[in-house]
Image (tube, rainbow, N blue to C red; front, side, top):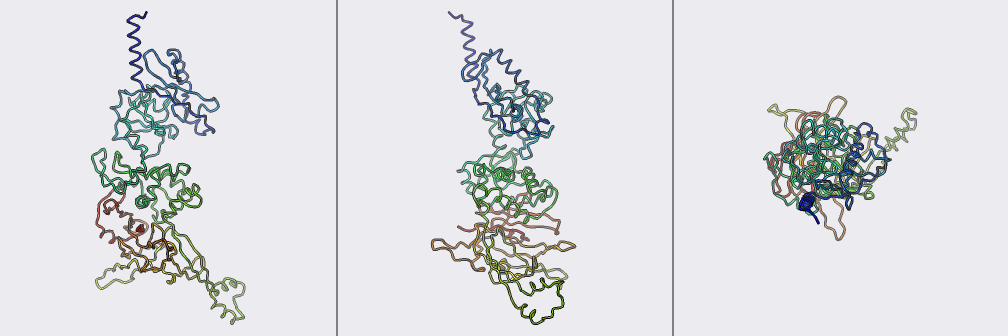
Length: 560
């Protein structure tokens, strides 16, 4: 027969059990490789874990499913902590598990400060500079490594009295130095900012959404129309990113990580991450820093494009599209989302005069040509080569600016219609090229892409300096009808010829060549409004203002 005291103890135990969350996870698999950084970044968590296990084993009694229960009624579960550091230190020792307490009632949740949280920067420990097993302190926003008793996060929790930390890889929240995991739905907004998520239904609704979002500081921003931080002379990257964010199929592809989950390229993963942050409606602030993406660009381009050095957005766009295509095409043989959006085809007719070939052959060997008649007949022969060439963007040549000033002693800024410079691709206009050898070229478009990228060749380099052509190009913002100006291939019987395009992005260069800055005009589809974006500055503008600028690169969308 039980005493009243025993009954009350049992009831208290049951209440304690009900208050705790039960969680069981399998022990993490053994890693198949040694990490060279491990010797620099291990904190002997194993010893303290074994001590904890021994203490728990002494005071607790084992129950079903591997759970332990101590005298206070707290539940524990066999958890692997998901720490990379712990996994690596267990290489060669077989599988090992550790008891982690899971609680819902953490008393320190009111110390979490969302104002200081910024997950745009690289996930490196602020003390050891290691990227293994990094936690963010949710009180001060700094990154620290590890969670064991000799780790930087543990030390910080004791020194500063900051107790709530999130693992940046697994998104689990822990309270230090106590070491228990916190499960609380109020932390979900932080997880969403750390790793934005989109369902396919949300992606489809993006272009219909007219709703503004509010940042923590009370400012309003439009998802997809957020400013990008200029870290140091990186405006050429910012305008390129903002332009590509208007290409709907490309954006939709990168918003869902499952589309490129098998791709190992850091550039692809960082570009996808940046795309999700730009279009996320629950950000804590109304701008995004493309810091991690720029680090991936520097590494992939072998520092051809880097922070602190101004570059050309046309060169960067060309490199980025080709690199993303190269990284993604292994998933699907030969094709990628890049080529589906931007790839068109040109027919190139090259005329080479045999006179130049003859000169090349005889150059230096027989300068005094004895058979002058033969040379004369050879000079009239023309070799013609016809080939098909894929393209991702078309380069347009601007007419040279006037050399002399007018009566008012001012340089006239010349203007040229877009259709005049598009005649380069009508199959009849001859373009003379010097490299690799002198030839006459004729171009004709044989396949139009869904998104057409045009760039105006404003800059000419010689041995001494770079010149900028100030000619204004007059172009339509809507209904660019290509078939009126360049011959297009006849479509198949069932297909309709789609040759009408609408402008969606226009990149502009201001200032002197080699210096200056870039800005971009982009269209928001849900309301068909135009916005001018320069780094962090985003302002609404009139469509008429878009056509008054010195256009450098444009993206047109095919009307469906």
